[in-house]
Image (tube, rainbow, N blue to C red):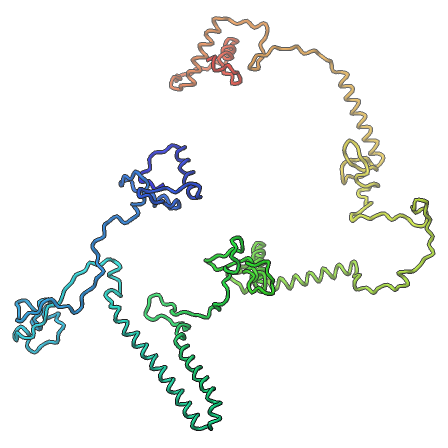
Length: 535
């Protein structure tokens, strides 16, 4: 995969290479190894893994993607601030006219300008500064903490600790003053009883002082003078730390799946536990309860309305979608109630009717019913035929019977007129007679035609292989047949090579029996198993 120059490959080799790459991506084949013995990720695109042709890389490698230029000697040190290298005793030529140091001139001198410079006084010559040059890399040039002395931070910590200590001492002194005032103003007995309360107050105040250390952690402050902005600090009351994390409720490998990226666990991690004792039943509990179901129904209604041509979109106009959904529910309820009223009006409401009196339910009648020995009713009650939901005994187009009351020659029809065409007009008895007469006439014509036909014996003809008739009295001239074979060979050569065809071509439509026989002899028969041995 990670080859430099793509050599020519046949179609089969290319197919095998593609199959090998797919197997490596699926984990069925081991990954490719580079020159250093490291595995090459099979999911790296080819335009990244293929080395340029001018590198002449024969083995798979990813060195062309690595940094091949040697880094210069970048340093991480910083200037030695305040360091001096040499302290002269008298002024030197080319030195600073103000202080006498050789490392800078009078224009860039950082000392206070003297009334008489060292060039003229030749006293208080300043020492030479230590000048250093560093070659920093990209990050080193932009590191704003480069050269920072970490020991200076200890002074900041000590200052804050001293402030907190002074604060605690001040609070304790205030508490002791309050206790002394209470002891002086009250009696000895009351003082004993209230002393415990004061000690408790003192302990509470001390606890408040201790808690003040942690108050800063719960406070969220905005970053100032930073490019990222955002917030700093930590909010500690996100959830109670004593609660067990959802992924620790069931440590079974086959239990509910936990997605660490979204921190979601849709299924119930403890499906067999008592629901009264569980505080977490999976994220699907919230998806299938409360307003989540209403929101889901609203989305489904928006999709279906959009498919039916409504200009509605849940994300673009949510208020419009919700209003349309409310109107839809109102109209649906009205339609349901209207349908219910229509059905009750047509068939009645048995539930709302009053119950029949007991005398009618258990009443007797004078009707006499006769039965035979087998228990069948002979007299007194007619057998009720079950009614169908379809219309019965409906006669159309002057028919006196229904469709399907007559069957003949695998066809249904009307019994009254014996027609097999549905929805046709009834012709009655006259139509039956006309149909019978037409049938008799057709049968007579068929019989007469069969009687008039003469059974002439067909002479058996001898057919050749290619399907033409060869008469028995056919006589061919051998000389003309040989000429016809030569002409057929020339014609076939011209068909193979069109360059041999002449400009002036004369056509002759007259075909002699010898020409036909030569064509038959030279014709290639594709069905002949011996065709490869004939030519």
